[in-house]
Length: 192
Image 1 (cartoon, rainbow, N blue to C red):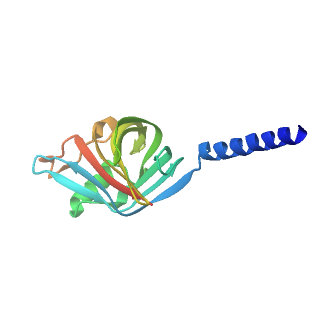
Image 2 (image 1 turned 90 degrees about the vertical axis):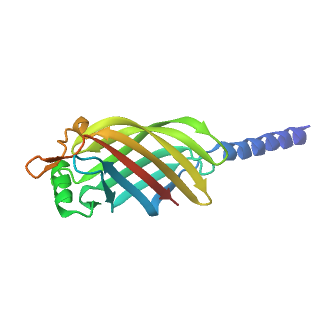
């Protein structure tokens, strides 16, 4: 009888141990890889414009790599790495973004809400704090997450007004050329 109880307890302990391992979340820390892109698009009285970001650092920590359960997501963009291909425009951009005082634009993930899900992707509303030129605002960014092999791709865009972050839209040629207040940030971030 004692042997049967010991075997039964051992069996229950073994099952509990296996189930515990299956439910246990393991964090995976993933770093951004190339080719990841961040573009900033806007308008002006002269023409539409686009700047690309040359230096983006991002770290993604997921609890479950197969289900892409996001634990943390931090994105840093170096302001001086924003390039339009036009020196005057870049200079005006750095001045408007107060690059000397605030050299980095950051997004810090707070929580997520699934909008749509299929076998190939998840549309998720990423909510977090976006800091530009020293001003922090809570934003919601709808993002498509796609897992391909060992790569996780976060793709989306977000519109915002520069004035919401205390940024005066740049002007040139004594104010005759003015940029529009609204800009769009497009991103395609790849993590492995």
